[in-house]
Length: 361
Image (cartoon, rainbow, N blue to C red; front, side, top):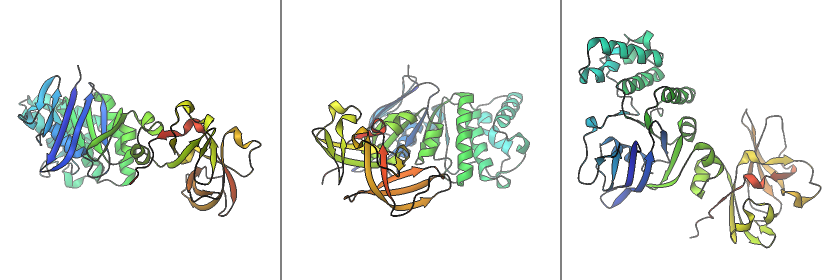
């Protein structure tokens, strides 16, 4: 039996649909992220799971029992769930220890058991030495750890997180996303995590749900999502990419100002007449000399028109000869090329993911 199921779930505010026909099942102990741009419906979906919003259509089940439907919503405090908000929402007039103990006190646990469980979870989040401090005396990262400890100590069946790292600086976000994954691996709580940050989703998640305009675009593990996007939106939202749109003409694919051998494409036998590919910048190699045989792979002749040094890598923009296309390429820091330098690009057909073509208007 699944732990949490969203079945045909939808929510409209007046005549405006915010979430449309969501079907999603989480296994016990799974960490799933809802990822997408602002306004895509991810937070509305989370708030329906939490019981704060009644769905317009569909239903939510936990352990096979109904939690939400258009006719009935189980109260948030009766769902066996914990939620962590953007603002942390820890009590400013309580110490770290008192904040973490609060949920256990509401559950009428004995004083000794509360003390044991509070100390154990504070050890886990490395905050026991700050047990007697107040939130105003803590850094943002420390406050976030307190919020995590308070949510986990009550041993919820499902943990919900609504963009919990958005208020932290970049370095602290990187540290805390790894901390969240570490805590999940320690406690194996079924988790739904909302974020617009793809790096957070990639680091923390077993699976990622990419949403757009209230609908699910794709659900997959991070590796498959990045390397095998099923839609153009997913390819462009998860990392950076180049879209190459062409027309199959016999043994060639005709692009803007250049052609490539069609037989080398992945699943070449099923190429449609209008073929589009997502090619990641780091999968492309830059060569100074032309290949011995241009048909031996996917080779494109071009000129470097832009470059940027970003410390860990160079980013180049190459314009193919007789083309208006712009192809982004990233290389290691030692591979230095000049503006207006003529180069050859080597694309790996096996790493060019086929995606739907552009929307025609």
